[in-house]
Length: 305
Image (cartoon, rainbow, N blue to C red; front, side):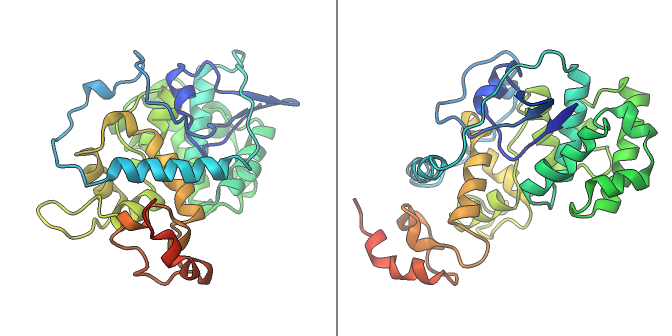
């Protein structure tokens, strides 16, 4: 049985051609992309970023210092997180692993990580429904019950059935191996497609931009709509704008970095600007309603080291 978790993307595991994508816990094989490595993205023949055109665009001032500051804040926070131990599981067929990656990615959309990992995906795995063949044969009502309470569980159950059938008919039980084909699957948008390419195929075709990355990049003034200084309106606009200047070696780690930062400090509501060590570089700092603890730290944290 295979259980997949996509809460974090591990740069080192992506670059290792999925040799260490699985961790063992009793009878479960759990795919857990752990914290992003702080090292630069190494060269790897499976990584296709060098083939991608990158539009030249002027990078924002101090972006390297901002990323380094966020890395330091996340590193401190991760010291208190349990460390996952990864172990190779060569017994899991690649097709099954990739279909499980796609399934978990679809379930993770608009759903909290622990609900997807500990709940929905694990229950599907316990019922041997993480393969295209098994999912295609399963009753849709059964799938609904197993994935509840993920967001839009009824629609996702229907989409999973359709995806399983497409994978069987067109890909011999495997999943599409290109962004264009993934985007043709029901319920799969750019964020999910890029995540699946990275984790499932070890192939970086773009940045995985979710609501956290979208929000933080706009707050930092890192992205704007083409030909204007207006904020980007969608995660896809943010992805395109970000890829114009961000070096490709940062395309994978920036997602995990900003997602963790967005959950802990640069939150959607009441951001903790006073707890942020890079607030002096942020044009949005203290302009939104902050938490009381952040306000009390405003002056001390704003001082340059």
